Length: 180
Image (cartoon, rainbow, N blue to C red; front, side, top):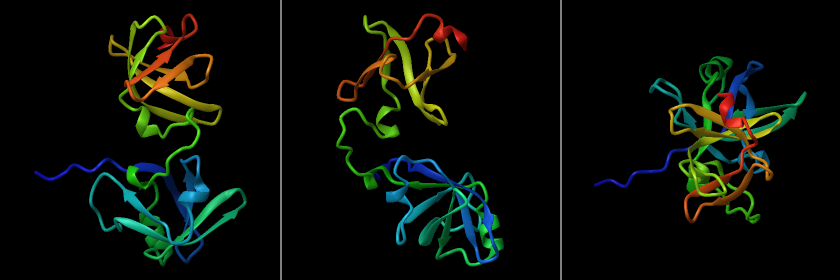
């Protein structure tokens, strides 16, 4: 039986082409762009159907321009090539991620699937994922009644994360989970 590989983690999204030589405008979806978007890095190209796109991109040049990240990939030489990549997600395999030194920091994939409980141990549901919003991270919870809720990932509300025991302890302010 073949060993199942972990799903790639999204680190960016191609917004649109830039110029005529195949540069890509990339929206960053990682806390460490200086590690992910460097010359020589290889990022997986994630999409829903197998088209003519390459399966990965080797970064040949990376630069900031007007507050946007511009990337040149070896496999993309024309504006048309770049246009075919519009909207695709760029990712890395979980095993390529570095270990975090701060015990209060987590990679998104380490949190997905954790059981969400209240401080008294009452079951709240399960963690579906982490949303990276402009104002900060939000935990996306699946509640027992089938609804979903977004919980700010702040110390006053998320009081403990225990990946060893598979739980995240949440002390939501009154009414937060009823908003959804």
